[in-house]
Every structure is written in structure tokens, then in C-alpha cells.
Image 1: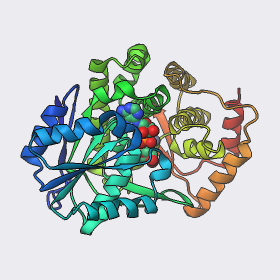
Image 2 (image 1 turned 60 degrees about the vertical axis):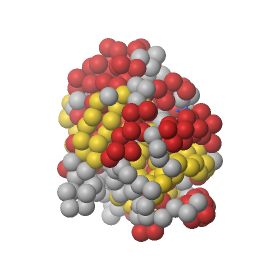
Image 3 (image 1 turned 120 degrees about the horizontal axis):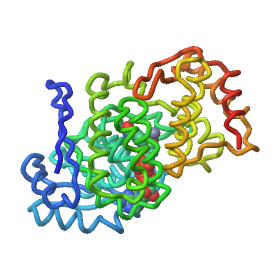
Image 4 (image 1 turned 180 degrees about the horizontal axis):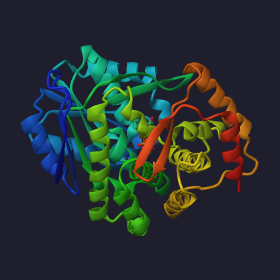
Length: 364
Ligand SMILES: NC(=O)c1ccc[n+]([C@@H]2O[C@H](COP(=O)([O-])OP(=O)(O)OC[C@H]3O[C@@H](n4cnc5c(N)ncnc54)[C@H](O)[C@@H]3O)[C@@H](O)[C@H]2O)c1
Ligand SMILES: [Zn+2]
């Protein structure tokens, strides 16, 4: 089991450990019993994860002498909303959960974001731990303390910064993850290489086949590297005033493409295309040699993620969204570009024409 420490503000007690390994759940229960004492534990999970792991988790906690129960929500992004928050809060009350209760988020980013949000407001906050079961969860969403639910007007518009007490990532969970969900995580993995770590990027170029075959030893190493990158960025900029923005590499256009496809593109697929577009823009503006942006495109292809946009796709719609975002943000979109792999910077001068050109160039 590998351990990383996230060092945040000592006054608010928000530092915590991330543990990563294979088959670590029994030890995790003992760690929770020893280091994260509570009168009762409520596992919040979705119906898919509950069916696969809910009982195992609850039994494990009970074997470790902990009083545990489960609250299930429907799987999917549509559960990230305020009525599900109300519903879960009601069920917590009915189970007698008070401030001596700890929540356990068992699931992907949806369960993690929702449970973190509930933990931050239920009875003016209760502690929670993250047990991420998706690749996105293990290398991204479970770390950093951003919690949220969606509003009809957009994603993640209602949320808090609230750190978990610990994060426990067991790669065994990934065995049952559907391929498309696994691929979503690969897009974020590639992103970490591009924004921070050329060695990681090179390893992905060389070993993508083993990554795709879900080789556990390799996954543990890579997840640890990604967690280390995210944690060091969050340590410097917990509330996204500056540096944390580089984590949005590929996401500005990625989100617009995802939305413009009416979510036929998954998040990872949108981000993959967004990263290719950001690399091309970097090349167009003479920051990045063309060979480097080709390397990015080919590693994305190796991961089984898309590299071209459907010819029928309306670039106008993406540009319209870009324009709307720009209005919201005082006319400046902070676009993350790169000077080389491992060296990102924030640029505020990308215009619609350039975006239109890149999208045209990316059409199949
Ligand atoms: N807080 C952050 O910093 C942050 C960062 C990135 C993403 N997010 C959020 O995370 C969410 C996406 O997370 P996600 O991709 O994990 O999606 P998700 O939570 O919807 O999980 C994807 C699917 O996989 C299923 N699943 C989960 N674990 C499984 C397992 N081990 N075996 C089989 N099936 C399993 C789920 O039931 C679901 O159907 C979005 O809402 C996004 O906004 C948050
Ligand atoms: Zn993302």
C-alpha cells in the first residue's frame, strides 16, 4: 500500500492521506477504525457500485467493529442535483446520523462530488472519506476537495471546497469498470503527463497496451504519479485562484464539445479532443513544435480515445458556447496552452477564428 500526504492548512485540519494499492480494503477498514473514529458510518454509493461492492464494504466495516449502513442513489450524472441531496439528507436523519457520523463515498466522481457536498453542509458539516471506484475518481475527482451538484443551468454550479479525511484507492475496483469509463480516466491520465510530467507521458507512449490491459502494478504506479501531481497543485492553490487552472488543460473546448454533442461524447472523449485542439492551438501560435502536438494526438489514439471530430459536427455551436463563456468571464477565457510536454501556461488571447480553424482541421 502506498501512502501520499496532502498537506493543506494546519489550522483547518484539512491535511489528509491518500492510500493506493491492490486488495487493500481490509487494511483500510482497520485504518478507518484507528484513525477516523466515528460513532457510525454511512456508506453513500450508487446502484451499480452497491450491487458490486456495497455489501462487501459494509461487512468489512462491521468486521472491523464499526457500525455501518448504506444509502443508495441512482447511478449517473443526473443524481448530482439538489433533490438527491435533500433525499440523502432525509435518509441520514431517519438513520439517526448526527455530527458523530462519518460519510463514506463509495463510487465514482458522481458519488464523490455529491457525498462531499452533503458532508460539507449536513448539520453544518460532518467528516467524510473517499473510496473512489472509477479511474477518474482514483486519479482525479477524489482528491482536492471540490464538491458539487449541478443546476439546470450548468454543471457543478452549487458546491463547496471541503476536503475528505482520507482517500483510499483500491485498483481491484477497476476490474469491473466498463471500458468506456476506463477510457475516460485515460484522458485525465494523459492530461497529467502533458501538463506536468514528461516521464509519465513517455511511459504512456511506451506502455499504453499494458495500461489498457489494466496491469495492476503499472496502474498503481501511474495512479500514484497522477495523485502526486494533483496533490502538489492543490497544495499550492486549493481554491483555484491560479495554478490549479492548469488542471483544466483540454477542458475548455472539451466541455463545449461534450455539450455540443448533447453528451454523446463522454467527458474523457471531449477532453481528448480538447487536448488535441489545445496542442494544435499551441502549435498554431508558434509555442509548440508540430512533432510534439503529433505525439499528443498519437498517445490519445493509442488510448482508444477519439482524435477527429465528426465531419457533420457544427463548429458554430462550440463557438457559440465559447462566446457565452467569455461573456460570463469578463471577456477573457483562460485557455491552457503548452510550450512543451510538461510545460503549460495560461493564455488569455485565443479568439473565435483560431478555434474555428482548429476544429475544421480536426474534422475527419
Ligand atoms: N471534484 C473534482 O475535482 C472532479 C474532478 C473530475 C470529475 N469530477 C466529477 O466526476 C463525475 C464523473 O465521475 P466518474 O467518471 O467517476 O463517473 P460516475 O461516478 O458516474 O461513474 C461512472 C459509471 O461507472 C459506474 N461505476 C463506478 N465504479 C464502478 C466499478 N468499480 N465497476 C463498475 N461500474 C462502476 C457508475 O455506477 C457509473 O455508472 C462528474 O460529475 C464530474 O463533474 C469531479
Ligand atoms: Zn476532467
